[in-house]
Amino acid sequence: MNGTGYRTGLIKDTNRTNWQNSGPRPIAWSAWYPADGNATQPLPPDPLFDAGEIRPGAEIASGGPYPVVLLSHGTGGTAESLGWLARALVARGHVVLAPQHHGNTGIEPYCPEGFLCW
Image 1 (tube, rainbow, N blue to C red):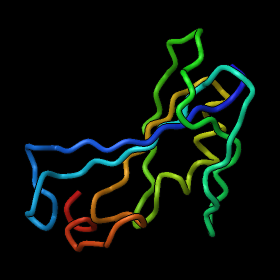
Image 2: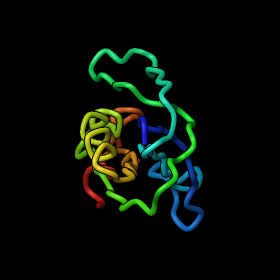
Image 3: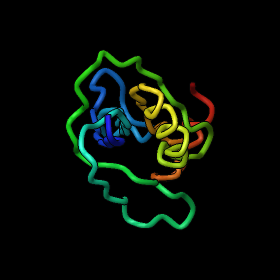
């Protein structure tokens, strides 16, 4: 392994509605993982958090399997705010998966349900 790969995605839970009852529940996620190669590319600048050296979209490194860590950003945060921790875990051979908590994350409007309905 020579670097940290990074990907984001969005899936929709069609078994639950979003907090506005206007569609399926969104589950946005970010993942950091061991990647082969040396090239790095920063994410666009963020006024609060440094994403560090990552390889967006890189292939996962050979040599797995890798243990998976599920990382929660806590109330009102974002997955990327814990990129420093995710990169440290990747350096120790883990894959890190971090969901954004719908209605309780800094990347979308806050909803009371996002704070009250765990």
